[in-house]
Length: 172
Length: 266
Image 1 (cartoon, rainbow over the protein chains, first blue to last red):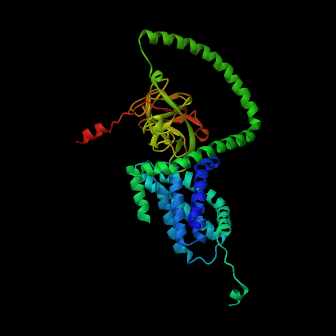
Image 2 (image 1 turned 45 degrees about the horizontal axis):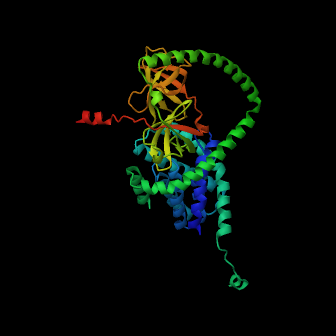
Image 3 (image 1 turned 60 degrees about the vertical axis):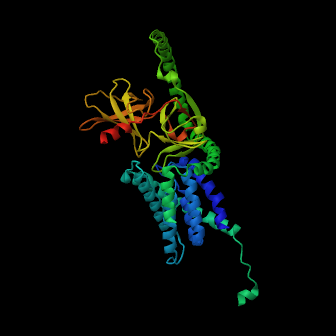
């Protein structure tokens, strides 16, 4: 189910990303809804589903952006694999861990995008862009991260088949 | 998986995936167009409410400006009439009279990432090609960098990668207008001896062949002397955040000067 949910949820998130989010811009930064939703899905789901989410989310946002197609896919996949490695070491998903992952995700996404743009001949000014785009985006992502995890958990609760355990099974 | 993503980037840049991209982007662009209208209405509505107190003062200022401009319009009409007669005598047609435009709605805004661009709901089916300029009555917006069947992407003049050959309306001093990270415009390479003043109108010069001459880019807000040339901060008259409708100049053909560079290399 997680594979199929990616299409409507991330499609809608990509559209909101390029229509509503620019209206609440802080300097050059805005919330990265796709990254937050993919990150929330990675935390709570198996690797295969997370990869699907990274692919669908990345393609959706790249189709609505001027960046080369695949730029966001690459950033999100790197994020998926890093979080997958970290997952085994995480004892509890508390707010500090979430904020750490958001910081990591924002940096990976922005660094990947800037690198690909530079390789494709676009002008970049990393230091200026870090303070004008990356830092405000990070602030927004931190604010939006908890609601994003809440939304993903709610979707999972609604759409995932519940395990029905009988009293006998529990006793065993 | 990572290799697949890298392959996707390369394939996209070479244009191999263009038909597939068109198919996938069409429903997304259509939905984005509808959402964009709602987002702009909401944003403008909230902005108006927040600015309500200053609106009355602004209204009074605008009424005063209107009265002043109406008088100016009368003078300009006279000059325009004279010009029309003289141009007819010389059998001279301006570029503006030959320009053909296609009206397009803005369907997505991508002004916050490392690239500043907008998407519009017109594409190759409407005669749009890569490189053609996009304008509004307030001035230059940017140029087309990607075209699909039903949608195109415009690189805004405020983007870091955007360079426009420009001149000052009053002194005709030449320079280059470049986008900044903050979204402002900077006119550089203005010769040191030239007189640059706040309020000067900056126009496209047409040099380089990327844009036709005499499109309004903006207005000088401040100047600075560098060692070898002068710089001027330029404010566009366009609010890029609330752009709704733009005009695409379909009959302008950008000139590709790269052929000369290749010859020089040989």
